[in-house]
Length: 163
Length: 232
Figure 1 (cartoon, each protein chain N blue to C red):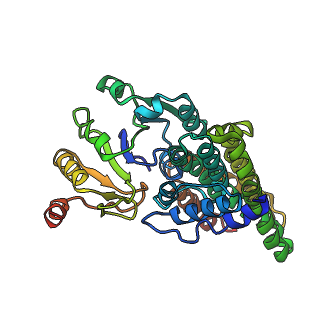
Figure 2: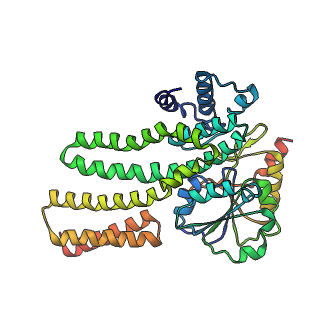
Figure 3: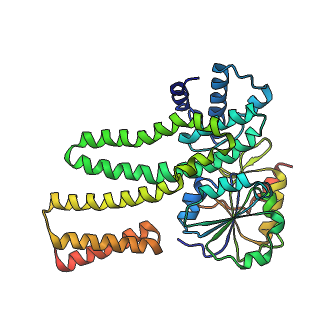
């Protein structure tokens, strides 16, 4: 299976088992980019994440501010870009285009969040941000590439229902 | 608390796994048990926070718990590194235990089971659990000794490469299994062995380009066509 596009994924666990086995190995991805200021600024955390990526895959860890459209042009279609939250994804909206595959994989359950799937729980603000992005691009909500995705069209109904 | 007791209690870590806090309940249970036995006073808020969302590989949990106690006692940032290591060790654990060790144990036990089914079953149980128990046994001490730098233990044993070598052994074992099944059921037949080896290689070549299961289906259809045209 191949998606044939650079993948943006929202996952609050960043790199974990599903990402490595379900996405990197299954889609034979060659590059992972992790956009996270706290990790980019800490050598120990950089070492931790570098140690868990399979040897055949490279990992770049960047500050969000260093991530530009120019950097994106250098990447191949075998790349996944990981962000920690819907807010982080929303902040990239000027960089995103319809040429990228946008995936929301895991946003953990917290108080006042609405269950979208068994791994994606969103609050109203996150739903608003995703609805806005949804107007421009397809957004695929699923934790693994072979799963059936959850349609995002009824988000406005959720917003109305939850006030 | 003794190592053996920590190991035993860590076997209950996933007992209340659920989609809301995943393994959070099990994590708090372990923190509770270990702090009580070792008379470590943990403030109520920190303890309550352990009920929050947590998800990692169950065989790696003792490394995280050990690291957490070390960071807590050193007034570090235990909850932040719990999250970091929860994800990181889940990646390592899933790759090795679920995607390498399980098929490897299956192939090796299937080879043994051709001759003695009970031995095959026992072998699977023992072989898989040697690794499982070893990681639970050593985890707390390694985590407590190294704290947030516990990843260096995994780097020291080159754990990230174990999956690659394990997969190679599993594929080799699969070839042996296939050859033995042919030899036992049909007898030594160079033509058939060559044909099967050819399709196994073809399947792996396809698998590098295509989805593995699709490659397997293509190889099976080609084999059926050749057997149909040539006869067995």
